[in-house]
Length: 215
Image (cartoon, rainbow, N blue to C red; front, side, top):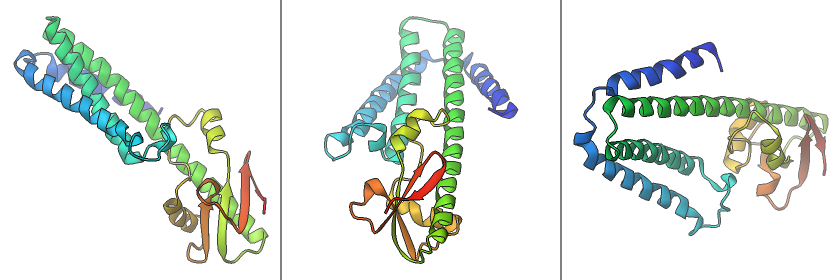
């Protein structure tokens, strides 16, 4: 993390404590209970996508928007649940505010870590397509469909810079922009992830920073 991010991770929880240390939580107990219930139902609905679709129940099965919604409602569920439980336990307002500031601290740290992982994933994608562009030129390929093969599961497991299923190249719609950004004409050359396309005219394999033609 950068110095500014470290400072913010302490300033934001401090502001949360300052704002809520004299807040009357008891008057909002009914609303907090409703928010907890709505958040819990939303989490269940978000996860139920696996019951009605072909998605595999792993991080790879999540659509980014679905995962984002679940994270949002999970955060609301935890926060409202902690406050509601604290009120039931008859804790003081300042104690509840301390709990909130601690939760805020962990949420800020988590979001910063995820942000850094997304930045790294972007660099990884650009490196992937940049080396693919070099390999395409070396093989004198001017048009056609190209499949890019690399072990995404191994990359996610072995790379400490990645936390969740960050946006490493996977879906077909991601390829045109990545191609254009790295010197590949997306109108002439269509790039696919090998896992997403059954038949490929040309296959390039990427491993340990090296791009080699497999077919």
